[in-house]
Amino acid sequence: MRPPALEGMLLASTDPDRLGAWYAAAFDPQDDVMVEGYRAMRFGRFDVLIDRRDDIGDTNPEPGRCILNFAVTDARAAVAALERAGTTWVAELEDRDGSLFATATDPDGNYVQVIELSPEHRPRSPS
Image (cartoon, rainbow, N blue to C red; front, top):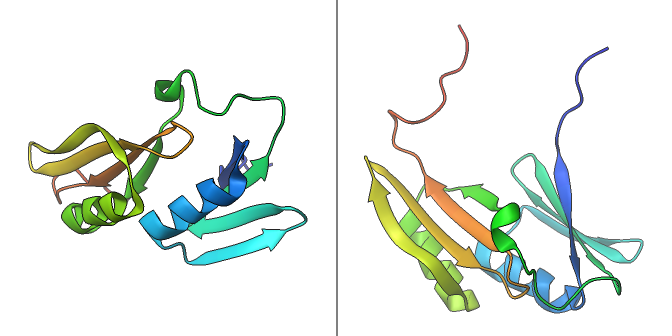
């Protein structure tokens, strides 16, 4: 048996329409569809599913517990898109040994990072 593949995550929200609109504006998903009452957005090989839940608060009380990382080829452009979408910065864009990182919050208070890795920091594929 092959090991399972992690392919997505569910973001629960009390306002999934607002949250989905923010992710669409900030990151321009390859696919964005409604499926049986929830929104499915594809980013690379990873799906973010946004669903309404009434057993949660309006904002995430511990946003550092799970952070969505978006690998980008142009961190400055990604930061500009996040600012146009309306965001609060946890950590503004910074250079870490040639790689660029920024951490923002989505409308529900979840942390979202954009990461532009330098060629030296990109994972090497096995030979």
